[in-house]
Length: 148
Ligand SMILES: Nc1nc2c([nH]c(=O)n2[C@H]2C[C@H](O)[C@@H](COP(=O)(O)OP(=O)(O)OP(=O)(O)O)O2)c(=O)[nH]1
Ligand SMILES: [Mg+2]
Image 1 (tube, rainbow, N blue to C red):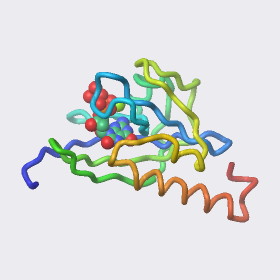
Image 2: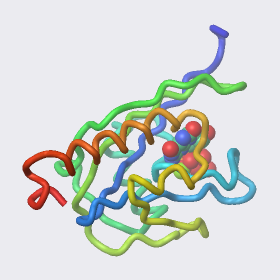
Image 3: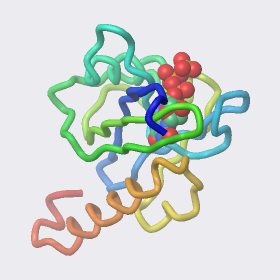
Image 4: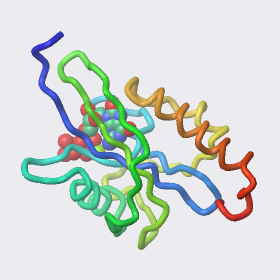
């Protein structure tokens, strides 16, 4: 389909010191409810993806992040029935505060190996594989003790 609206969503792979990734469960009543996603949301008119993410992480998780701590990780490009999703995903390993589900959503810190237990939106499947590979590279590398 060529006439679908393009929706820009900015998302984050928030990675804890032990290497776990934060997943958020989409709340009841929203599209794709119950599925586990990268925290984030739609980029609003006039916003940069980075700024949108700072705003979303404050609203959804109650944490403060600095755009300087965002590293481009990957992106998803996926055609849903009613729109086309373009979603840059940043990696972030530094934040202020303890993430909480401020909008009633459940959160989970998940090891790369356990990601398979968390069903994700269709757009995220490749990204989760990529995260697993990224973690594997780190653990197999010589820097193991320094990286996590
Ligand atoms: N945040 C996020 N959204 C995702 C992921 N995968 C995926 O398909 N999406 C889709 C679901 C939604 O259609 C869209 C994000 O919309 P959203 O409902 O979370 O947007 P938002 O946080 O701005 O919330 P709202 O104000 O529009 O309700 O992107 C993901 O990993 N993270
Ligand atoms: Mg959201």
